[in-house]
Image 1 (cartoon, one colour):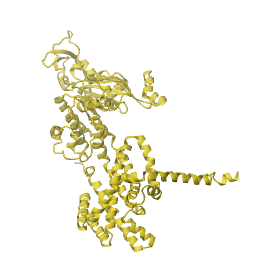
Image 2 (image 1 turned 180 degrees about the horizontal axis):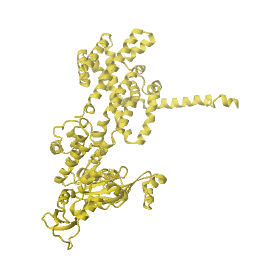
Image 3 (image 1 turned 135 degrees about the vertical axis):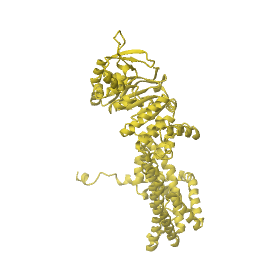
Image 4 (image 1 turned 120 degrees about the horizontal axis):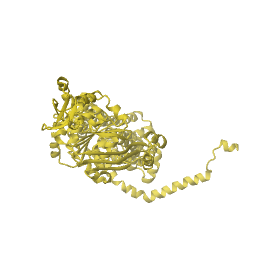
Length: 340
Length: 296
């Protein structure tokens, strides 16, 4: 995997009258509840370290109040941190002056909001070109690029409608088109699909994955929904009370939850749909491979489980794309993993 | 001791007289010193007012009527309102009140333009800083509660009797709702819309013109509507210091007990008020039709 596109280091955010003063307490180990009760400051984020890789989807998950929306707003500095560092492509975002920050936001990032945040007095097309419009890009060029994305998100024919005339799902498509028209490398999505009905949400997730397959943006996706996180995320970070409990690929979080909070979170997940063969295989080390069933390493368990049940092999041999043997998995271990 | 409880310990009579005399004298000195200069400063405004008045009176009535009805239709898109306006101005013309009405419309127009030019930036400045808001709000409170007769005194002392002091009095009376509602409208703009503008790298100016002002427009428009209504309400008081128009005949009628004349001119003020109110309100609603409508 390529090196980190966005690097967050020792990031602290404390809300209140004297955050710098309260920092002392936090560094001395005062927790969120105590800080609020005794010092009247709210702990937003505590010592967050996160490397987000280029062209991958990083999900940040947590319940409300966990600090996930605060965290994403540090990446384009809509919120000033109390302490720490955020670098994008090696540039320190927190050291930029007003002008540099504006040009950074215009050229590198685009954001999609939970409640859409469209401008009600502008049409779908005018909303979509908003990012380009404020960069004084000619209307002709802006429209051309906007119309392409409006079509890609399935809103052709609605260019001249006002947001109020559209349903929630369609409004968020406008939000997505607006962000894509801006053409930054980084797409920040703050609970972008949380306000939508389950069916429409699924549609939007599919649209996002389809686009990502083609565009390879660096996506930071905030959600409180584990199923969504597992479906979309290449990696998942779990936040609780402003502290990052665990960070890793979905399978790792499912198989080895580090804290009780994470454990509770992942308890009811259908593992077969999230874990791939390669995540649970062990090294080939002189095991008896006769009669072992070959399995593609990138297959999810639920893709091959039926065959395992009907053929009843003792062992599975895991292969890569070129049918080369890369790993070993006993049926016994597989059933243990599914039972847990 | 009993005296202390029954009579408030007040300023001695002599000192109080001196105090009043002192303030009056220094204000008179100020007026004598600066009156001409201040007069000259307001000269362009006087020219504008006189221009409006002369143009309106010189315009042949059928042309005025066509323009007025055209504007009414353009603003409201309502035939009913156009017919109503037509009948109202026929009433004004038939009962010999045309020229006075034109003078009144001229001063309303001038004072509303002046109110917008001063009030809009003030409201914007207020919305941007809590400090400015905390300074301007009490000033507006004074402007709205102080009886207009009281601030007429220093204005007349400074500038004499005439159109400009009248205009200033009207603006002082009419401008506060516009300032307040501009401030309120901008402060009430959806935080997420502003955050989105920030996230896409909008400058302060771009945020103001593309997000804050358009979203606050309905509220600002309510303010302009209020300003028009209050300016009309000031017409009679302004006529006491020499502003021509519908107010002066009403004032005469009060002094001389001309019942019919008083009622007719009073009705003319009401008519102008209702027409301006309805047209500006329906225009305000029409420019934000994107806010209503069904979900497809």
